[in-house]
Amino acid sequence: MVTDATPHIRALLGRNIGAGAILDAASRLREDPAATNVLSAMGLAVGTGAPPEVRAALAEQLRRVLASALLDAEHLTWILAASSIPGAEAQTIAKTLAALRLNVLDGSREPYGLPPDVWVTITGPDVLVDLLFQPLNVFATFVRAVFTTWQGALDAGARTYWENKLPDEATTSIELFILRGWGVPIAPFAALETGVGAAKRVIEGLDLEPVDSVDDLPWERNPDPFVNQSAFVSVPARESGGLADRFYGHVFSNDFWEVVEAPYRPRRRMEPLPPYGVLSVPFREIPRLYASSADELLAMCSTIARHVSKQGTGVNRILFRGQTREYTLPRDKTTLKALYGRDDVIEPSLVPSASRRPPSSATQMAFASVLELASVSPAVQQETWRSILGDRQKVAFAQHYGLATDALDLTEDVKVALWFALTRLDPATENDFVASPVDEDNVSVLYLFRVGEFDARAIDVVDSPSSRPALQRGWVSSGSWGWRANRAATRLEAAIYFPGSVRNALALPATTELFRPPTDEPVTRIAQELLERLPESVVGAELARALYSIVT
View (cartoon, rainbow, N blue to C red):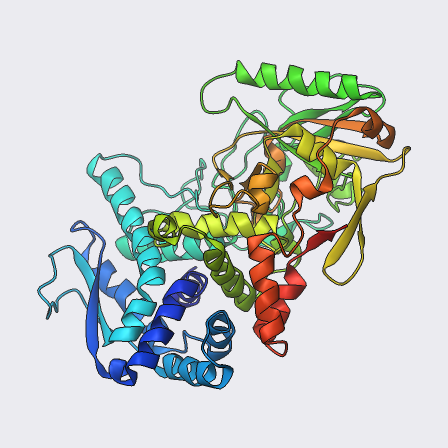
């Protein structure tokens, strides 16, 4: 249960500290060192409907964050390397900024005559208030959206049980803190029997995560809200103990297994298609098609896209992902048999990189700053960066540049996906790769996804035609984290397999059309310049290890 949201607030603020604000703050300090003594204030508004006790509790959480070491001198120095400020002076300015602190007043004190919907008032050194204006507004826009959404539901008398629709752990945990303080019911969507009993047994031998109570799930781990769900029926839980699937988030009480066999059994069985049969995800089977020629491959893509386009508004688009090989989830046969009723099913693994190697906060902060520096029209982008939407767009870009995120990179252009499916990337250096065609007998795979609620377009965030997501017509599918790490697989419509030899008959983009040289691409160019200016910087070294480029 989330009783302390400060780590998550700190993470959200930290990854949204803007490079532009840092550079502006440094310029002001150079011109007027006394700027650290000039006080100013900023009020964060969340709407008049927010309960006072919840506002006060969240204000206390924010106060704790701002009283701790939020700004890192190493990170500030690294960003200041992008300016004309000499290195020694930049370090002095960075240390000065890192030493400054803000003060958070609760909503009952409005010494600056701020409007009545102000949630908290933040006061402190003028230069620091300006520097943190962007991340605090990102936080405020998110909190305001939470209050507005739930107040509307309560006023309408709608069912108020919580279902997670957020794309990462930080925002989920902050929302849970608010709702628990508000008293909004947070419980599974399940027909739980009155007075669910204590755990009476332990289910052994299955590669699933133990759960202490199915009636009080650890929501910060992103479980599915429907307990004891199967393909055809959901049954009430009679015992509190249970098991959770750490790939799809489904939770089952221990007594469930006595009543239902193979909960992931498909609602409709497909005839296996030779030679590849089907893929399996909870409650569905997905066709595994084989194309022996380029024409057959493209015809299959067109047929599936037309089929999906006729199925309704909002879900009528196909996105693609190409891989040189297929990966499957690491399930043992006993667990597969228990879940699907068969031990020979094939579960595709589409787990985002952050689930395998969590990113460091320093790397996230550094990349976000570089991304802002790369924007050629900062005036247009500024309002975006100051909102929670900007936070998610940064994640979308990070995924396309090689950083570990909770997102999966996709594309709307089938030719781009086929380039990735038919191209081997061999390391040239630690972060540079050389592209070459796969062997002609290699079996590649093209995944076709239906657009889902967590899919977001990652194009034109940086206003430059040479940015990597723009070149690759990039999208991301987020929301795959915690116990639902393989959530993207549930959006699959089909998987098409084909030999490497089809490349010869396809007009694929050239490598330079998808990956500009590092010196021509704004994000990688700026990151490299900063690394050269501060070769000993820990921040720069971490970011350099995360970014990748294709060299020719």
